[in-house]
Amino acid sequence: MTTDRRHATVTTDLGDLLAVAEGDALAGLYFPRHWHPPKVEDIGAEVPSAGDPVFEATRRELGEYVRRERTTFTVPTVTHGDAFSERVWDLLVTIPYGETTTYGAIARELGNVGLAQRVGQAVGRNPVSVLIPCHRVVGADGSLTGYAGGLDRKARLLEIEEPPEVAESRLF
Image 1 (spheres, rainbow, N blue to C red):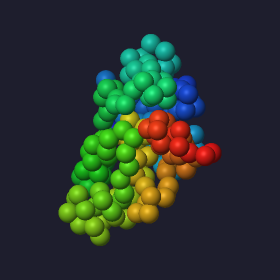
Image 2 (image 1 turned 60 degrees about the horizontal axis):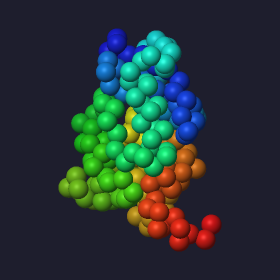
Image 3 (image 1 turned 90 degrees about the horizontal axis):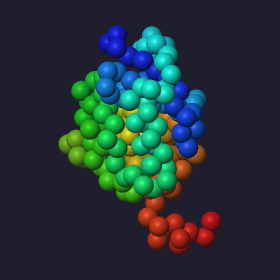
Image 4 (image 1 turned 90 degrees about the vertical axis):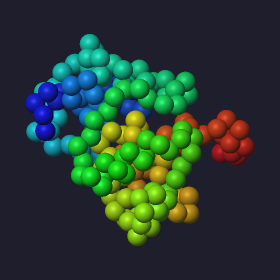
């Protein structure tokens, strides 16, 4: 990892998130009790989130997202996965706001439906939650499946993105 990494706790409407920046880009965004937290040696020095342009932009854009004022993010991100994971994460960013896809569909897009389990592993190790929208990937039957930040959070993120007419038609 590079030496210009730093981290802070960013307070959002989604809770306190561990944010990791590398230069001018967000390199990590993790919920409490995240399944795959970063190694302490990979997050750099702790800094205040106030005054740091990457952390302030992340907090602001997440707030707009939760209030349904933002459907895309402009905070630059950087990831350092293997070639396969990077391909998967690049595909996650193309899933439109308010829509979902499946692990199998991503595997098909990569040219081999047999890669669905490996796609799931890469999705689960996405280092930049929400901004790289791994929450938009569901099981083949539409069920909510694993989410490194917890299924309750995945459900909340999908609810935020739910079209108003769908939300209004729900009984509960």
